[in-house]
Image (spheres, rainbow, N blue to C red):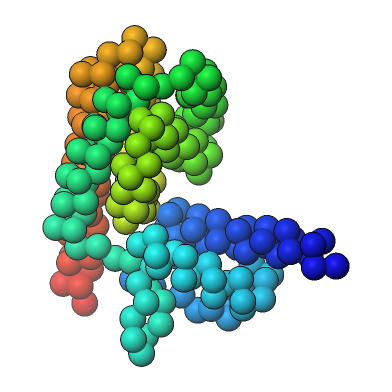
Length: 231
């Protein structure tokens, strides 16, 4: 009996974690909001146990803060935190891309091409949710192709802090188109095994994303200040 139920329990816990993670990344739970364990468990039709575990895992990933006497809060980074995080990510991914260009297998390259094709289809449909998930898989696969487990763990940990912002920043049509073009350039550099070019493209890609996110946050802050002034 135990052998049969255990996988189902594991699947339920993983599914709860992934659903809650998507709510945070896609901004359906706003930064700074308190996570009501009971309400979330009811909305996802699960018990409190998998929800509690999901919140703990998200806290470990940096998407949630556990604050004494307040509970779990969706992480809200300052502008300075955002800039510093993107600066670190740029170096991590740049190095990762350089290693990947030297180490990537033909099988991994074929998988990347397939994911790129799927991502382009999502972009054509303007399906932001699907596009972002495929985009993240591509970034993770490039990190895996670097064949450096320490680097991969660091990327996952640091990137978790800004995933929601990376998701939201693609809603600008022109900037989104530019990001898609950069991904194609990265794929071309990987196919050519051009490590220096790959590193340069990725660093510029991340810096462009940083600039878009910073502008987004500044615009939102200005709108919020204007609304407060009206009151």
